[in-house]
Length: 272
Image 1 (tube, rainbow, N blue to C red):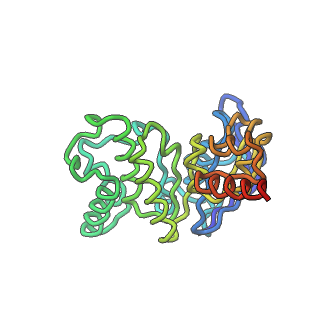
Image 2 (cartoon, rainbow, N blue to C red):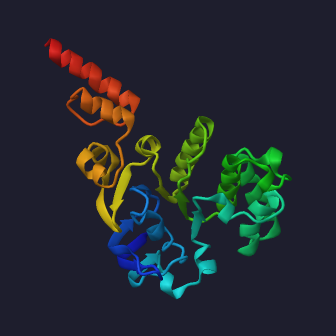
C-alpha cells in the first residue's frame, strides 16, 4: 500500500521545530533509505508512519488510512516499526514470548501465531535462543530479537531505524537476504541509516534529510555521487564512491563490481 506524507510539520513540546513542510510518496513494495545527520528529522518523520507522532500540520496516509484517524494499535496492523534502540521495545521474559506478543495482540489465530513466530525466529537465526531472556543476550542480538518481533506481525510495511548499527558482517548478509525476500513478497521497506555502504548496495532510492526537510530524493546511483549535497548533512558517500571520485573516474560507482567495471573500461579508453 502507498505511503503519502503531505507537507507535514512537527514541533516538539519543548518548542523545537523538527519537521518543516516534508512531503514524500513511497509506492507499494518500494524500498527506500533515508539518510542525514543526527537531528535532521529522519526518526521524527518515520514515527509519523505508525502514529507514534501526529503532525502539527499536514497529513500522513498509509493506504486509505489517515494516521490522524487511527490509533497506534490500529496502525500496527499496517506498519511494523523497529526502534533504533531495541531496549525500547523488549519487555517479555523469553525471546519466543517477545516475538509472539505482536501477532497475538493483533488477534491472529494460535496456529498462525505459532507459524509466524517460528518463521521469524528462523529468519534471524534465533531459534536456538528462543527460551532465553532477551536481556541475557548482547545488544546486537537484542536488536535481532526486536526485528524478529516486528517481522512476526506480518505487516505490509516495515520501518527500520538503524538496522545495521552494532551488527557484524554476518548479520548484514542476513539482512541483505531478508531485503531481497521482502522485495519479492512486495513488502514496503523504509530504512533510516548512517551506513552508506549498506544503503548504496541494497536500496535503489535514497532520501537525504537536513534540518527537518527533504534535501534530496532520487536514485541512489545518482545521489551517492552528489558530494556537495551529502556534505550539507554531514554524510559521506560510500568509500568506493570516494575512491572513484579521487581517481576521477568518468561515472559514479557505489559497489566494488561497478568500480572494477568502470576502472577496466577507463583503462581501455586510455590505451585507445
